[in-house]
Amino acid sequence: MSDICKILIVDDEKEYRETYRIILESRGYIVGEAGSAKETLDILDYEYYPLVLSDIIMPDMDGLELLKEIKNRYDKSVEVIMVTGYGSIETAVNAMKMGAFGYFIKSHNPEELLIEIEKAKKIVNFQNQKIISINKKEGRRFLNQSKNPKMKEILNIIDTVASSNTNVLLLGESGVGKEVIAHMLHEKSNRSSMPFVAINCQAFSDNLLESELFGHEKGAFTGALDRRIGRFEQANGGTIFLDEIGEMSLNTQVKLLRVLEDKKIERVGSNKPINVDFRLIAATNRDIRREIKKGSFREDLYYRINTITIEIPPLRERKEDILDMINFFINLFSKELKKEIRGIDDETLEYLTKYDYPGNIRELKNIIERLVVLSKDGILRVKSTLEKTGKINSNNESSIIPYKEARRRFETEYILNVLKYCSNNITQAASIMNISRRQLFNKIIELNLKEHME
Ligand SMILES: Nc1ncnc2c1ncn2[C@@H]1O[C@H](COP(=O)(O)OP(=O)(O)OP(=O)(O)O)[C@@H](O)[C@H]1O
Picture 1 (cartoon, protein in one colour):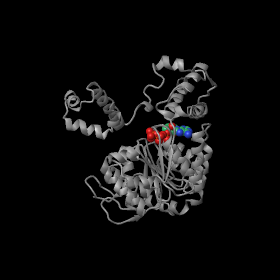
Picture 2 (cartoon, rainbow, N blue to C red):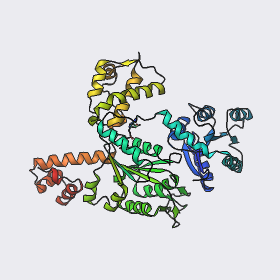
Picture 3 (cartoon, rainbow, N blue to C red):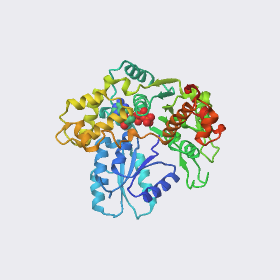
Picture 4 (cartoon, helix red, strand yellow):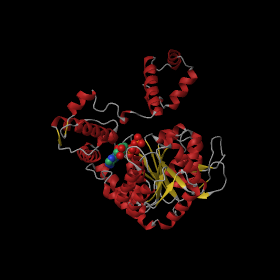
């Protein structure tokens, strides 16, 4: 991407975001959306947008505060055009003094906004894109060191392969940090000033995933009211991270394989090929080889995406890192929550270093956040947290797994139990379960239960 074409729209009102998106996409811009100032800062942390279009009046942090924070973090690498519903010259002048590129009054003709954007296009200094990735590194968003031999080796591999263009497959349980590693690979690569675009394949139905990945033309299907740029196009020049690739349907796998071979995409509803230049990082917590045997993952695609495979160990197998992680997250949350933390009591430390963390780093992170929030005197105490909540990690997202995975686990356990009860007599088991013998047999194949049947 040699031109400014990405704009992040910030407005707490969805209708306004939609309206701007339609106008801007019709002019060929790639548009991102944020519903609040905080979300904007989170997005900018991961993805580069040279231009932000921000509303001024928003709850919590308003547009002027957001402008100040963006200028603070990114200076001239990110320009901001303020949008105001009131046309108050005073606020607009204030914003310009604070470094806004320009302003636009909501009730005015959108053509004025497009002219302002065209002006910004000429000014944004692309050389400054580099500054962002340097800032990111200094920000230490991730802990990128380890005392565990296997993890050390992985960090070495990341250093070695980051600058190459090879496809990387990341394997490991949920929460071990696959997306974090993907980020590290991107930030260490010479694509770091270009976008890092992540997409969770599990979050979309089959058709939606294709339109999300490849984009679509206006009218390509019912509900496709406008042209939409897909993630591959957004990632042009940078890295695309396909999380949960094991969940992708065979149909979409065929299309992905073609894109990997040709480095060209076609938007849904169009047969015009568009060149795309990206590095692919894929991840899954499934046993892909088993999926290949079952016929639900294409072997040729597997060999395309696994040029380098990195298997990230669960946290319980790298307990020597727990202490550093605890310190890292205490630091992170005490800064974020503006709370001084002086220490951690012995009982808590023992609990945290011995615990098995089925939700891996995500769970440890959530526990520390909880302890920091609940600490009254700057000391982290499991006991008082337990007293207050009954469970240290209750209600946190780490204990929530995707629905499909929960169903798979339930079905596996349930069917194996019934089969055991019936001494593996499939007819009898099917009759107890009130399903046909054929249905049960199909489930046994689908869930790969044969090898578990004693
Ligand atoms: N090295 C690290 N330093 C700091 N935070 C980390 C690190 N690794 C993981 N985390 C944090 O742990 C959480 C889970 O990480 P991430 O999303 O990368 O895991 P994942 O393996 O991709 O999970 P899933 O398979 O569920 O998508 C995130 O909040 C992330 O910020």
